[in-house]
Image 1 (cartoon, rainbow, N blue to C red):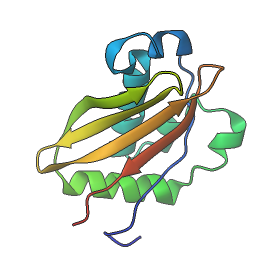
Image 2 (tube, rainbow, N blue to C red):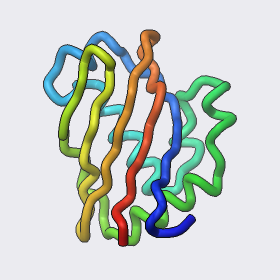
Image 3 (tube, rainbow, N blue to C red):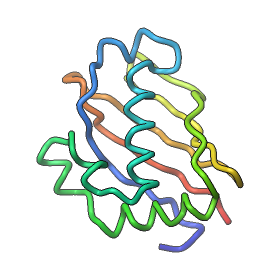
Length: 126
């Protein structure tokens, strides 16, 4: 995909939803987002999808994970996530994924069953 295009990857992971809306920064939602981000950085498709439901597992391709991993590595070492904003009533949280040479936005949405309903990465326009 072109460097200027938005890369989005919808993924799902098991997360206790009750904690996510009550803690600043999304609580366990941030832990889940960080875990998925680390797995993408490591180009570990199994790690990315290991806790996903079957429907969303089928949407994840090896090529997408590899492309996102390459984009992340171009920014240097992964430093972690920083909470940016959230809407607990919608179970939506935005984080900044920090790297040595820049950052990316990570947006997640949790469903009523405590699973990540969406995981999206917005890459910088470089």
